[in-house]
Amino acid sequence: MEPKSNAGAAVELKSLRRAFGNVQALNDFSLEIDQGELVALLGPSGCGKTTALRALAGLQDLDSGQILVQGEDITHVRASKREMGMVFQSYSLFPHMNAQENVEYGLKLRKESRKKDRRARRAIEMLELVGLDTQSKRYPHQLSGGQQQRVALARALAIAPDVLLLDEPLSALDAKVRSQLRDEIRRIQLELGTTTLFVTHDQEEALGIADRVGVMSGGSLAQIARPAELYERPTSALVAEFVGLTTPLQCEVRDGVAYLLGSSVPVLPGSVTNGAAVALLRPESIDLVPDPQSQSQVLTVSFLGSVCRVVVQLEDKTLLTVQALSEKIGDFPPGSHVGFAFHGSPVFAKPVA
Amino acid sequence: MKKLTGVARIWRVVILLIVGFYLLLPLFSMAEFSTRAGADGGRTLDSWAAIPTAPDLLASILVSVQLALLAVLGILVLLVPTMIWVHLRLPLMRRPLEVICMLPIAIPAIVLVVGIAPIYRWLSQFFGSSPLSLAFVYTILTFPYAYRAIDTSLRSVDVNTLAEAARTLGASWPKTIMGIIIPNIRNGILGACVISIALVLGEFTIASLLNYETMQVVINLLGKREGQISVAVSLAALIFAFVLLIAIPTSGKKQEVAQDGA
Image (cartoon, rainbow over all chains, first blue to last red; front, top):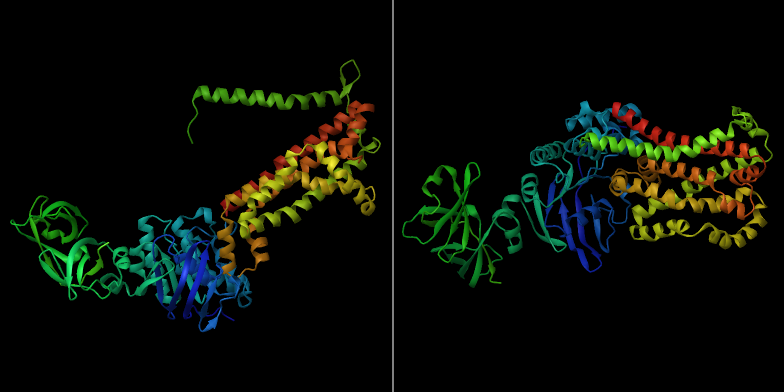
């Protein structure tokens, strides 16, 4: 019998709770992942994202809650019986086995892959998928960090898991390899259709790879949405501040409209609707316009390629970060006086602390 | 690596020579004494040839070797699985286990004997007066050294992640420990075994105080009657221990080299 196909299973995590002493790592955490979907959990250290992933893997006991995979309750199933493929943050290849033996290990433990040649074929296939079939006889210490994580990915996928679990697999790699491998993970995931849960603290990674991104805080989900929606329409100050760059600016909100910098902007649902508030402005939501009469002055300009990041000092000495196209940056040298034009996209307004 | 300057290199050689001289001089003296043929300065291997015929000696060597193997078995069966389990599943017990394993080194042998003599009197009801019953106390005696060797190995690899990787791939706990953890701490286990063998082969105090005839006890008795034979056996035992100490870690390295070349 050939190993089963890689198409994953739907996952449901229901009201998971787990405390470590006084710290509630998972606090009524619920999440649904559709078949073949890639969901990224994003959040600062200690927000519970890794605990959630480990609970799904069966490596973390729960105080309460339920885990369903393809409708089947696996809450009390041992890790070794769960059919999860996992790639860890630290290099986890078995040092005494070469790349191919590492990939074959999970297959060896499965009845359907007892035949050696079939197992070897599958291992090579998986190594081919991650572009390392020529390195199959190399031992982990002979591979670079990126190559080791590729083999770990091949090893996790070889068993055709119900769910692929990625626990910050890119965080130990340098920037270039990280972005290459990130794209490759997404390519392979789409190719195989494996249901995937990806945990990271790097928002660029999460937004760049996932179908949906969940932002975690205090052991539960603050918001889960498609990357663009999460960025453009955060439902809480926490998400607005954690995802992307924002500048907090005092404003007045009346009937769902914020008044600031001489303009009016609609506020997002979940914001303060009336009274004094702090608007969280994205750098790209404002355009700079030359205004010699203005008291706002350009302080610094940082070149980032096609765009520049401009820090403007407002009249009240507050610093505002604005993004401007590099081709237009000649109009705003440091020291020049500028005004602002809002795009009209809504902003999030949080209560004044 | 930083290149040594000329003076530093000379110092290194000098220190190596002094230490080498200090360590090897007694061995040369033993070799010289055990091959002495009378007062005229001739050489003979008579003492070495007499080893097999010396009364009780061969039997005691056999006993000591058996004891060493039993102590190794004790480490493999008791200490290795316990340490792996504590490392993986009961990290809070690491410190208490370390303290317990280190105790034999802190307790003087004579105190240990006074403590365990009544136990041995009781044990003799079940095991008779067989010197092999010393294996119980010897296993405990080797714990501090074996613990250090195995602990260093366990810390040098991320055994927790390896175990978790194996489990998510479908390995049961026994398969994880036998197939993944043990091969990766193999050198530590080998080191623990070598040190234990050397320790048991050289142990005198406890065996003597408990009146068991092990190799060292018989060598001591022989030394009073046949000085040269006793020194020859001591030297042979030392060389055997050295060969073990050098051979086993080297075999571990050879395997690594083979892997590199693969």
